[in-house]
Length: 496
Image 1 (cartoon, rainbow, N blue to C red):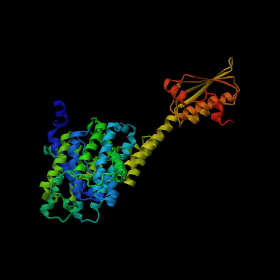
Image 2: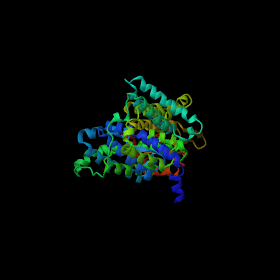
Image 3: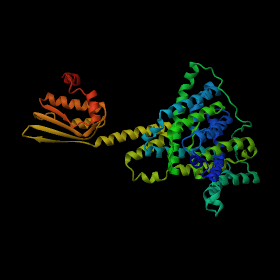
């Protein structure tokens, strides 16, 4: 117990505290911006980010991962808020949490094993592009001061780590924010600041039960939104967990993370916040700033609220250019630059899956659509590839007038046609043996192909014997096959 507490909370105190402060600073403009996207007051996003980060620090399955209000979730809320108002959004947030807890108990976190590496790479690259694109409004129609500040910020971020002693102690993104804020205040630069993004809350969040009728009509209104939010939230959280696992060379409990996301969203809804999920950008900031344990996530949430309530007069002075520099660093660090080089080395199917995932996510701004497209394509390519690993050879024994077909490989919907084409049904033989000892039948399409082969041979006057079915294949053939049942030929071949 004590060892687990030490490992998950207090094994990296200084790094976690500093990283949490950097993440908290980056969360503020993001939470405000996502609130504006969803069409709600900025405090809704800030309260949500505080609550989700604090709760997930205790109940999440991935130490060091940051969860808060996100753009992917905000986009799904727009119509609900516009047509029904904030109270229905809070109710939808509660139901989202319930769905995510159910998903955790159903162990749906394990479904991530069906997401191929090429889909994850495409997802990451698309997110890096979206993060960069989100900064462009801050860099268009602005004075040269903004470009100078952004360039200076990037210079600090990438060069400060090379400074002896202190370069290894202080996270460069935090130094960037402090230095640029000091310069902007000292010189009196007229550039956009965090204060221009929206009004910050001045009170603690309070318990707030959604003021909606508890009836079937309300459920029908929020159900589709809650389902969408639950799916996108879990998808982005599982993807983020995979990326943080790779960055830290550790593992996470994905089913616990599903439940944790659900508990955190229920907490957010009860404190007047919007639904959220794991944030890849902020999680990468956390890891690259030295955050590793649950303490960094807790620090980010707590310090976010402290800054908003106590240091608001300083926070509003932070130039957006400083935060833009941090987010550009995140987008550069997020993008898998090796994937460009790998386009020449990886198979064409892998490259297509990666590129399609990127294109769909960037085009729709919906991470779920991109991942779905990538998974479907990867599945089709895999089925096609496995279908080619099936071969049928044959031998003829003149003494017994027997043709023996030996099937090797996987027989399923993709390879069933190739399976049938391997047989010569017009050959005049007395006996046919189909040896399946090195084959496996996966679905009813494969069983149907075996039925057709056996019945066609019998129609040509041959005695057919099927040998070597393994236990799993025999089970599905016995259950769905008809070649050994009365009137099978008429039933399967249409009586012709």
